[in-house]
Amino acid sequence: MDKGLLVPDELVVEIVKSRLLEKDCTEGFLLDGFPRTVVQAEALDKVLCETNMNLDKVINIEVDKNILVSRAIGRRICKECGATFHIEFNSPKTEGKCDVCGGELYQRADDNEETVSKRIQVYLDETKPLIDYYSKKGIIFTINGEQDINKVFEDIVLALGSEN
Image (cartoon, rainbow, N blue to C red; front, side):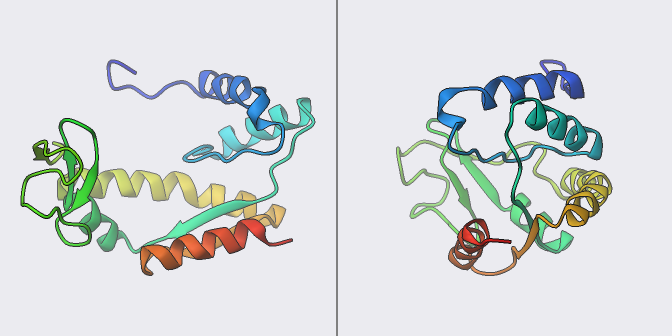
């Protein structure tokens, strides 16, 4: 990880398994950004089977690639407290200054159009099979991520609360 390399699937799955065995996961859990591939999903299925747990819902938030790029390149982060802003959708009261702590805002070096576009394409290439995988299981809920953030949140809550 320190070298910027991907963590091997086996290690990621072991970390997730260890976390799922913690006491606060006995009534349920939410995974964000995992699994990212079908190989990871199959390994997660095995772990869940071994631990008598199950995955009952998968949320897929769809957003057009161009909108994702725009959102990423407009992101600004506070150097002091890590608060996140956006130059268009959640701008700070004072340009370049954090509303929370007054710290300086910066743009991540990788939040540029070329890098973000590549990251999104890799995600799309790896995720499409995963979407198909969970669609076949009948547990995927697709949310329109281009709506107002409060509506997206509401749709996620509704999907999580629904009985398939």
